[in-house]
Image (tube, rainbow, N blue to C red):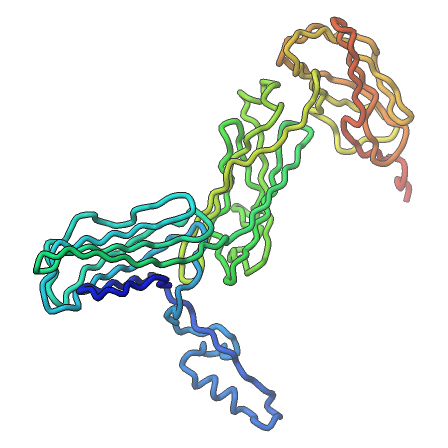
Length: 411
Protein backbone atom coordinates (compact mmCIF):
# COMPACT_ATOMS: atom_id res chain seq x y z
CA UNK A 1 0.00 0.00 0.00
CA UNK A 2 2.94 2.34 0.54
CA UNK A 3 3.53 4.27 -2.68
CA UNK A 4 6.18 6.71 -1.53
CA UNK A 5 9.23 5.83 0.56
CA UNK A 6 11.47 8.59 1.88
CA UNK A 7 15.17 8.18 1.14
CA UNK A 8 16.41 10.21 4.11
CA UNK A 9 17.46 8.30 7.21
CA UNK A 10 15.24 9.24 10.13
CA UNK A 11 15.37 8.45 13.81
CA UNK A 12 11.70 7.47 13.81
CA UNK A 13 9.99 4.68 11.89
CA UNK A 14 6.36 4.96 10.80
CA UNK A 15 4.12 1.92 10.33
CA UNK A 16 0.52 2.00 9.19
CA UNK A 17 -1.68 -1.09 9.23
CA UNK A 18 -5.34 -1.49 8.40
CA UNK A 19 -7.44 -2.97 11.19
CA UNK A 20 -9.86 -5.54 9.85
CA UNK A 21 -11.49 -8.65 11.21
CA UNK A 22 -10.36 -12.13 10.19
CA UNK A 23 -12.35 -14.42 7.93
CA UNK A 24 -13.40 -18.04 8.23
CA UNK A 25 -10.96 -20.51 6.73
CA UNK A 26 -12.03 -22.21 3.50
CA UNK A 27 -10.61 -25.40 2.07
CA UNK A 28 -11.19 -27.43 -1.07
CA UNK A 29 -12.42 -30.92 -0.12
CA UNK A 30 -11.22 -33.92 -2.14
CA UNK A 31 -13.59 -36.88 -2.06
CA UNK A 32 -14.20 -40.15 -3.85
CA UNK A 33 -16.58 -43.06 -3.66
CA UNK A 34 -15.78 -45.92 -1.29
CA UNK A 35 -15.44 -48.38 -4.19
CA UNK A 36 -12.68 -46.26 -5.73
CA UNK A 37 -9.01 -47.14 -5.14
CA UNK A 38 -8.39 -44.64 -2.26
CA UNK A 39 -11.43 -46.00 -0.45
CA UNK A 40 -12.00 -44.10 2.79
CA UNK A 41 -8.57 -42.45 2.76
CA UNK A 42 -9.70 -38.95 1.66
CA UNK A 43 -12.60 -38.93 4.12
CA UNK A 44 -10.30 -39.97 6.96
CA UNK A 45 -7.81 -37.21 6.11
CA UNK A 46 -10.57 -34.61 6.19
CA UNK A 47 -11.85 -35.92 9.51
CA UNK A 48 -8.35 -35.61 10.95
CA UNK A 49 -7.89 -32.09 9.57
CA UNK A 50 -8.32 -29.60 12.49
CA UNK A 51 -9.62 -26.90 10.12
CA UNK A 52 -12.74 -28.80 9.06
CA UNK A 53 -16.11 -28.85 10.77
CA UNK A 54 -16.90 -32.08 12.55
CA UNK A 55 -19.68 -33.93 10.75
CA UNK A 56 -19.52 -31.57 7.76
CA UNK A 57 -16.02 -32.17 6.44
CA UNK A 58 -17.08 -31.87 2.80
CA UNK A 59 -18.19 -28.26 3.25
CA UNK A 60 -15.71 -25.65 2.02
CA UNK A 61 -16.26 -23.44 5.07
CA UNK A 62 -14.13 -24.39 8.06
CA UNK A 63 -14.33 -23.46 11.73
CA UNK A 64 -10.95 -21.74 12.00
CA UNK A 65 -10.18 -18.05 11.54
CA UNK A 66 -7.72 -16.72 8.98
CA UNK A 67 -5.89 -13.43 9.48
CA UNK A 68 -6.00 -11.12 6.44
CA UNK A 69 -2.94 -11.40 4.23
CA UNK A 70 -3.48 -8.20 2.23
CA UNK A 71 -5.08 -4.80 2.48
CA UNK A 72 -8.44 -6.16 1.28
CA UNK A 73 -11.36 -4.30 -0.20
CA UNK A 74 -12.97 -1.21 1.29
CA UNK A 75 -16.58 -0.54 0.35
CA UNK A 76 -18.66 2.61 0.44
CA UNK A 77 -20.58 2.88 3.73
CA UNK A 78 -18.09 0.83 5.76
CA UNK A 79 -15.81 2.16 8.51
CA UNK A 80 -12.12 2.33 7.61
CA UNK A 81 -9.92 1.67 10.66
CA UNK A 82 -6.14 1.97 10.73
CA UNK A 83 -3.39 1.53 13.31
CA UNK A 84 -0.57 4.10 13.20
CA UNK A 85 2.65 3.48 15.10
CA UNK A 86 5.72 5.73 15.35
CA UNK A 87 8.72 3.90 16.80
CA UNK A 88 12.02 5.39 17.95
CA UNK A 89 14.64 3.19 16.26
CA UNK A 90 17.56 5.32 17.41
CA UNK A 91 19.59 5.39 20.64
CA UNK A 92 18.77 9.01 21.46
CA UNK A 93 15.76 10.82 22.91
CA UNK A 94 13.52 12.52 20.34
CA UNK A 95 11.48 15.57 21.33
CA UNK A 96 8.35 17.44 20.20
CA UNK A 97 6.89 14.63 18.13
CA UNK A 98 3.74 15.48 16.14
CA UNK A 99 1.89 12.80 14.17
CA UNK A 100 -0.84 13.83 11.74
CA UNK A 101 -3.09 11.62 9.63
CA UNK A 102 -5.16 13.13 6.81
CA UNK A 103 -7.39 11.39 4.31
CA UNK A 104 -7.42 12.93 0.84
CA UNK A 105 -10.39 12.18 -1.41
CA UNK A 106 -11.37 13.56 -4.78
CA UNK A 107 -13.40 16.33 -3.14
CA UNK A 108 -11.96 17.03 0.32
CA UNK A 109 -9.15 16.51 2.82
CA UNK A 110 -10.10 15.21 6.27
CA UNK A 111 -8.06 15.26 9.46
CA UNK A 112 -8.33 11.85 11.15
CA UNK A 113 -5.85 12.34 13.98
CA UNK A 114 -7.28 11.71 17.43
CA UNK A 115 -5.02 14.39 18.90
CA UNK A 116 -3.13 17.27 17.30
CA UNK A 117 -0.95 17.95 20.32
CA UNK A 118 2.79 17.19 20.39
CA UNK A 119 4.46 14.53 22.51
CA UNK A 120 7.20 16.07 24.65
CA UNK A 121 9.73 13.27 24.20
CA UNK A 122 10.11 9.73 22.97
CA UNK A 123 12.82 7.51 24.44
CA UNK A 124 14.69 4.85 22.44
CA UNK A 125 12.68 1.68 21.65
CA UNK A 126 9.46 3.44 22.64
CA UNK A 127 6.55 4.20 20.36
CA UNK A 128 3.50 6.40 19.88
CA UNK A 129 0.34 4.56 18.87
CA UNK A 130 -2.91 5.88 17.43
CA UNK A 131 -6.02 4.28 15.96
CA UNK A 132 -8.11 6.21 13.46
CA UNK A 133 -11.63 5.51 12.21
CA UNK A 134 -13.49 6.98 9.28
CA UNK A 135 -16.85 6.11 7.72
CA UNK A 136 -16.22 6.04 3.97
CA UNK A 137 -18.72 8.20 2.10
CA UNK A 138 -17.10 8.57 -1.33
CA UNK A 139 -16.26 6.16 -4.13
CA UNK A 140 -12.87 6.23 -5.84
CA UNK A 141 -9.26 6.82 -4.91
CA UNK A 142 -8.39 7.68 -1.30
CA UNK A 143 -4.93 8.62 -0.06
CA UNK A 144 -4.00 8.36 3.62
CA UNK A 145 -1.31 10.97 4.28
CA UNK A 146 0.70 10.36 7.47
CA UNK A 147 3.12 13.11 8.48
CA UNK A 148 5.65 13.03 11.33
CA UNK A 149 7.63 15.99 12.61
CA UNK A 150 10.13 15.87 15.48
CA UNK A 151 13.23 17.50 16.96
CA UNK A 152 16.51 15.71 17.59
CA UNK A 153 18.49 16.08 20.83
CA UNK A 154 20.76 18.52 18.96
CA UNK A 155 17.84 20.84 18.12
CA UNK A 156 17.51 19.81 14.46
CA UNK A 157 13.90 19.79 13.25
CA UNK A 158 13.03 16.96 10.85
CA UNK A 159 9.90 16.05 8.95
CA UNK A 160 8.75 13.23 6.69
CA UNK A 161 5.52 11.92 5.15
CA UNK A 162 4.22 8.64 3.81
CA UNK A 163 1.34 8.14 1.42
CA UNK A 164 -0.96 5.12 1.43
CA UNK A 165 -3.31 4.79 -1.52
CA UNK A 166 -6.43 2.62 -1.68
CA UNK A 167 -9.64 2.35 -3.68
CA UNK A 168 -13.17 2.53 -2.28
CA UNK A 169 -15.57 0.31 -4.18
CA UNK A 170 -19.34 0.32 -4.56
CA UNK A 171 -20.93 -2.52 -2.55
CA UNK A 172 -24.52 -2.34 -3.76
CA UNK A 173 -26.34 -1.50 -6.96
CA UNK A 174 -29.67 0.16 -6.15
CA UNK A 175 -32.39 0.70 -8.75
CA UNK A 176 -35.85 2.13 -8.08
CA UNK A 177 -39.15 2.00 -9.94
CA UNK A 178 -42.31 3.96 -9.22
CA UNK A 179 -45.87 2.79 -9.84
CA UNK A 180 -48.74 5.29 -9.58
CA UNK A 181 -52.06 3.92 -8.34
CA UNK A 182 -55.44 5.31 -9.37
CA UNK A 183 -55.56 7.03 -6.00
CA UNK A 184 -52.81 9.22 -4.58
CA UNK A 185 -50.88 6.14 -3.48
CA UNK A 186 -47.40 5.53 -4.88
CA UNK A 187 -45.67 2.14 -4.90
CA UNK A 188 -41.89 2.07 -4.81
CA UNK A 189 -39.92 -1.01 -5.86
CA UNK A 190 -36.28 -0.98 -4.79
CA UNK A 191 -33.98 -3.51 -6.47
CA UNK A 192 -30.81 -4.09 -4.41
CA UNK A 193 -27.94 -6.17 -5.85
CA UNK A 194 -24.87 -7.35 -3.94
CA UNK A 195 -21.95 -6.58 -6.28
CA UNK A 196 -19.22 -7.63 -3.81
CA UNK A 197 -17.52 -11.02 -3.70
CA UNK A 198 -18.86 -12.08 -0.29
CA UNK A 199 -22.37 -12.65 1.11
CA UNK A 200 -24.13 -9.92 3.06
CA UNK A 201 -26.55 -10.10 5.95
CA UNK A 202 -29.21 -7.47 5.24
CA UNK A 203 -29.88 -6.05 8.69
CA UNK A 204 -32.26 -3.31 7.60
CA UNK A 205 -33.70 -1.92 4.39
CA UNK A 206 -36.18 0.85 5.14
CA UNK A 207 -37.67 3.85 3.41
CA UNK A 208 -37.61 7.19 5.23
CA UNK A 209 -40.51 9.09 3.63
CA UNK A 210 -40.60 12.80 3.02
CA UNK A 211 -42.73 15.06 5.17
CA UNK A 212 -45.70 14.68 2.79
CA UNK A 213 -46.03 10.90 2.92
CA UNK A 214 -46.71 7.98 5.24
CA UNK A 215 -45.06 4.71 4.27
CA UNK A 216 -46.12 1.08 4.65
CA UNK A 217 -43.57 -1.70 4.12
CA UNK A 218 -44.86 -4.60 2.02
CA UNK A 219 -41.98 -6.99 2.74
CA UNK A 220 -43.62 -9.13 5.44
CA UNK A 221 -46.41 -11.72 5.51
CA UNK A 222 -48.76 -12.64 8.33
CA UNK A 223 -47.94 -15.83 10.21
CA UNK A 224 -50.34 -16.30 13.10
CA UNK A 225 -50.05 -13.46 15.58
CA UNK A 226 -46.86 -12.03 14.11
CA UNK A 227 -45.41 -11.10 10.74
CA UNK A 228 -42.41 -12.68 9.06
CA UNK A 229 -40.08 -11.34 6.42
CA UNK A 230 -40.78 -12.50 2.88
CA UNK A 231 -37.05 -13.30 2.60
CA UNK A 232 -37.03 -15.76 5.50
CA UNK A 233 -35.40 -15.69 8.93
CA UNK A 234 -31.83 -15.60 7.59
CA UNK A 235 -31.76 -12.57 5.35
CA UNK A 236 -28.56 -13.26 3.39
CA UNK A 237 -27.80 -11.76 0.01
CA UNK A 238 -25.28 -13.81 -1.95
CA UNK A 239 -22.75 -12.18 -4.36
CA UNK A 240 -24.44 -10.81 -7.51
CA UNK A 241 -27.90 -11.72 -6.17
CA UNK A 242 -30.72 -9.17 -6.43
CA UNK A 243 -33.63 -8.64 -4.06
CA UNK A 244 -36.77 -6.54 -4.52
CA UNK A 245 -38.25 -4.47 -1.69
CA UNK A 246 -41.72 -2.92 -2.02
CA UNK A 247 -43.18 0.11 -0.22
CA UNK A 248 -46.51 1.89 -0.41
CA UNK A 249 -46.58 5.66 0.13
CA UNK A 250 -49.74 7.60 0.77
CA UNK A 251 -50.01 11.38 1.20
CA UNK A 252 -50.79 12.57 4.69
CA UNK A 253 -54.38 13.84 5.07
CA UNK A 254 -53.33 17.47 5.29
CA UNK A 255 -51.51 17.19 1.95
CA UNK A 256 -53.94 14.84 0.20
CA UNK A 257 -56.69 17.44 0.53
CA UNK A 258 -54.62 19.89 -1.50
CA UNK A 259 -54.88 19.08 -5.19
CA UNK A 260 -51.63 20.88 -5.99
CA UNK A 261 -49.54 18.42 -3.99
CA UNK A 262 -49.95 15.75 -6.65
CA UNK A 263 -48.65 17.91 -9.48
CA UNK A 264 -45.09 18.18 -10.75
CA UNK A 265 -42.00 16.57 -9.27
CA UNK A 266 -42.63 15.02 -5.87
CA UNK A 267 -39.98 14.11 -3.31
CA UNK A 268 -40.70 10.61 -2.01
CA UNK A 269 -37.95 9.98 0.55
CA UNK A 270 -34.69 8.06 0.80
CA UNK A 271 -33.64 4.45 1.35
CA UNK A 272 -31.64 3.49 4.44
CA UNK A 273 -29.69 0.24 3.97
CA UNK A 274 -27.70 -1.48 6.73
CA UNK A 275 -25.75 -4.72 6.20
CA UNK A 276 -23.09 -6.86 7.85
CA UNK A 277 -20.27 -8.89 6.30
CA UNK A 278 -17.67 -11.43 7.46
CA UNK A 279 -17.69 -11.42 11.28
CA UNK A 280 -20.24 -8.68 11.77
CA UNK A 281 -18.49 -5.77 10.02
CA UNK A 282 -21.22 -3.19 9.57
CA UNK A 283 -21.91 -1.00 6.59
CA UNK A 284 -24.59 1.60 5.94
CA UNK A 285 -25.76 3.49 2.88
CA UNK A 286 -28.39 6.16 2.44
CA UNK A 287 -29.57 7.13 -1.01
CA UNK A 288 -30.20 10.69 -2.05
CA UNK A 289 -33.79 11.93 -2.02
CA UNK A 290 -35.83 9.86 -4.47
CA UNK A 291 -38.06 11.84 -6.79
CA UNK A 292 -40.80 10.80 -9.15
CA UNK A 293 -42.76 12.70 -11.75
CA UNK A 294 -46.33 12.61 -10.52
CA UNK A 295 -49.04 12.17 -13.17
CA UNK A 296 -50.90 15.26 -14.25
CA UNK A 297 -54.68 15.21 -13.97
CA UNK A 298 -55.57 18.43 -15.79
CA UNK A 299 -58.08 20.82 -14.31
CA UNK A 300 -60.44 18.14 -12.99
CA UNK A 301 -59.52 14.79 -11.50
CA UNK A 302 -62.03 11.94 -11.45
CA UNK A 303 -61.05 8.97 -9.26
CA UNK A 304 -62.83 5.88 -7.96
CA UNK A 305 -63.55 5.72 -4.23
CA UNK A 306 -65.70 2.56 -4.10
CA UNK A 307 -66.42 -0.18 -6.62
CA UNK A 308 -67.31 -3.87 -6.12
CA UNK A 309 -64.84 -6.49 -7.26
CA UNK A 310 -67.49 -8.67 -8.91
CA UNK A 311 -70.99 -7.80 -10.20
CA UNK A 312 -73.80 -9.79 -11.78
CA UNK A 313 -74.65 -9.54 -15.46
CA UNK A 314 -77.47 -7.04 -16.27
CA UNK A 315 -77.99 -6.23 -12.59
CA UNK A 316 -77.51 -2.64 -11.36
CA UNK A 317 -74.67 -1.96 -8.92
CA UNK A 318 -73.40 1.16 -7.12
CA UNK A 319 -70.08 2.96 -7.34
CA UNK A 320 -68.74 6.15 -5.74
CA UNK A 321 -66.55 8.56 -7.72
CA UNK A 322 -64.59 11.51 -6.39
CA UNK A 323 -64.36 14.76 -8.36
CA UNK A 324 -61.51 17.14 -7.45
CA UNK A 325 -60.95 20.65 -8.78
CA UNK A 326 -57.19 20.77 -9.52
CA UNK A 327 -57.31 24.23 -11.09
CA UNK A 328 -56.99 27.64 -9.46
CA UNK A 329 -60.49 28.80 -10.33
CA UNK A 330 -64.04 27.94 -9.30
CA UNK A 331 -65.97 25.61 -11.61
CA UNK A 332 -69.69 25.08 -12.18
CA UNK A 333 -70.00 21.44 -13.21
CA UNK A 334 -72.60 19.44 -15.11
CA UNK A 335 -72.46 15.63 -15.22
CA UNK A 336 -73.40 13.67 -18.33
CA UNK A 337 -73.59 9.86 -18.45
CA UNK A 338 -73.13 8.35 -21.90
CA UNK A 339 -73.92 4.67 -22.46
CA UNK A 340 -71.40 2.51 -24.28
CA UNK A 341 -71.79 -0.88 -25.97
CA UNK A 342 -71.49 -2.75 -22.65
CA UNK A 343 -71.95 -0.04 -19.96
CA UNK A 344 -75.44 1.35 -19.23
CA UNK A 345 -75.85 4.14 -16.69
CA UNK A 346 -78.87 4.40 -14.40
CA UNK A 347 -80.15 7.84 -13.54
CA UNK A 348 -80.55 11.28 -15.07
CA UNK A 349 -77.84 12.57 -17.39
CA UNK A 350 -77.07 16.28 -17.55
CA UNK A 351 -77.65 17.06 -13.88
CA UNK A 352 -76.04 20.01 -12.14
CA UNK A 353 -73.32 19.28 -9.59
CA UNK A 354 -72.99 22.88 -8.51
CA UNK A 355 -69.94 25.06 -7.91
CA UNK A 356 -66.63 23.54 -6.89
CA UNK A 357 -63.94 25.82 -5.46
CA UNK A 358 -60.18 25.34 -6.17
CA UNK A 359 -58.78 22.28 -4.38
CA UNK A 360 -62.23 21.12 -3.23
CA UNK A 361 -63.69 17.65 -3.83
CA UNK A 362 -67.09 16.02 -3.85
CA UNK A 363 -68.27 12.41 -3.71
CA UNK A 364 -70.48 11.24 -6.54
CA UNK A 365 -72.62 8.08 -6.00
CA UNK A 366 -73.69 6.50 -9.30
CA UNK A 367 -75.50 3.36 -10.46
CA UNK A 368 -74.96 1.33 -13.64
CA UNK A 369 -75.20 -2.14 -15.15
CA UNK A 370 -73.28 -4.14 -17.73
CA UNK A 371 -74.53 -6.21 -20.67
CA UNK A 372 -71.40 -8.34 -21.22
CA UNK A 373 -69.47 -10.83 -19.13
CA UNK A 374 -65.80 -10.73 -18.26
CA UNK A 375 -63.55 -7.85 -17.27
CA UNK A 376 -65.28 -4.63 -18.31
CA UNK A 377 -63.97 -1.05 -18.30
CA UNK A 378 -66.22 1.62 -16.86
CA UNK A 379 -66.45 4.52 -19.32
CA UNK A 380 -68.79 7.19 -20.56
CA UNK A 381 -68.66 9.95 -17.94
CA UNK A 382 -68.42 13.57 -19.05
CA UNK A 383 -68.01 16.74 -16.96
CA UNK A 384 -68.67 20.20 -18.36
CA UNK A 385 -67.59 23.49 -16.78
CA UNK A 386 -70.38 25.94 -17.65
CA UNK A 387 -68.19 28.93 -16.80
CA UNK A 388 -65.65 28.25 -19.57
CA UNK A 389 -67.87 25.93 -21.67
CA UNK A 390 -65.12 23.31 -21.39
CA UNK A 391 -65.85 19.56 -21.45
CA UNK A 392 -63.79 16.76 -19.87
CA UNK A 393 -64.39 13.14 -20.91
CA UNK A 394 -63.35 10.11 -18.82
CA UNK A 395 -62.92 6.60 -20.21
CA UNK A 396 -61.44 3.51 -18.56
CA UNK A 397 -62.05 4.93 -15.09
CA UNK A 398 -61.91 1.49 -13.50
CA UNK A 399 -62.51 -2.17 -14.27
CA UNK A 400 -65.03 -4.63 -12.88
CA UNK A 401 -65.47 -8.39 -13.26
CA UNK A 402 -68.94 -9.32 -14.58
CA UNK A 403 -70.29 -12.83 -14.00
CA UNK A 404 -73.56 -14.55 -14.93
CA UNK A 405 -75.27 -15.84 -11.75
CA UNK A 406 -77.31 -18.42 -13.67
CA UNK A 407 -74.44 -20.40 -15.19
CA UNK A 408 -73.65 -23.57 -13.29
CA UNK A 409 -76.55 -23.12 -10.80
CA UNK A 410 -78.27 -26.34 -11.85
CA UNK A 411 -76.87 -29.68 -10.77
